[in-house]
Length: 447
Image 1 (cartoon, rainbow, N blue to C red):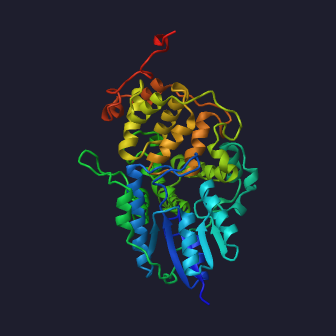
Image 2: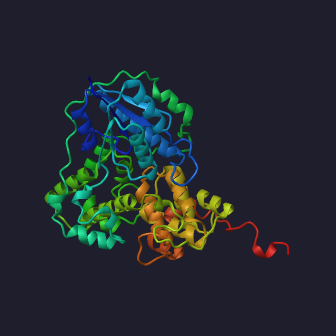
Image 3: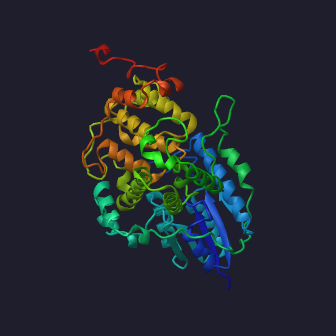
């Protein structure tokens, strides 16, 4: 009897360095390569996927198109379903007598709940997951996931005591072959996509900063290390605008079109060729920041979305609809914040420095519930990553892994340091939409 498998693509939209896909290729006779798009309508609760912003839609579409092309080289096809994965996978299991289900291990509690529900419902099927989104497997860490250090500094010190050249595995090659596809009766998925998503391109929008897909990610990775940018990264990384001040690996890392281990390999080759310094180390340092939040998400699961965070200490913030709307649109009293939010809304991207500033403003100056800010970023960011986004928002809100508590930035001082000539603010018209926080002052309310 033939073994029929489903490979559930999620945040691993690549053939390269994909241990889960390699396992699927070796264990079944026929394979259904599946991706489910259920993020066009957010469900109740913070753990549900958010509605996709226009730029994020485009990036995902390009990533799926590229994956479809790559699978075609293997004689395979990509089955894209515009429905929740629990529904789509259940239907495929029943119709095609599926014996195996494969996926990459996801950090999100929503995705894990689906996986666990399927395991309970279909106990006769073999389930297999592999870690493809991180530098390490759990067995390689110098502690259990449950014993994850409470701060990044402690995590980094423990990691750097290891022989990293030996511990970080070399990236795996793409499979040589894949099993043929099962005969799935499916409509062409791209017309269905257009029914659910409206195109973002119009005459007023600039060209996208990033092109989705593993091919584009590999091209960007190679191009970055072909220049000398890595040797001065630490000096430029706090920039606000442009492509060259930071690595810009994050969009492809986020949906798995680029492997973190492939980045480390390229970084090491660059250091061997051009020399290692503080800047090249800092690229690895920030990959470790990302790594920490991945295991933070695995460790804390639903607490990632809790108002009181992982410390069970609720902030003294609330929700003011008018302030929230002004923050989203870039119409606050703070020019640097306005510029950042307008950049985000147009490009789907925001610098690391910009993200810290808008989050600090959201919590401290606007007094808003941090979860609304995190959810808006989930909607808009091309490089949205569950663990990095929600973990960093907890950090800035003082309910996460920051041992110092609240990080409040002096916005005027930050603008003077990082935009001394006002070029960023002027480019994004941050000083042209200054508005008071509230349309009615408290003193004007009737007694």
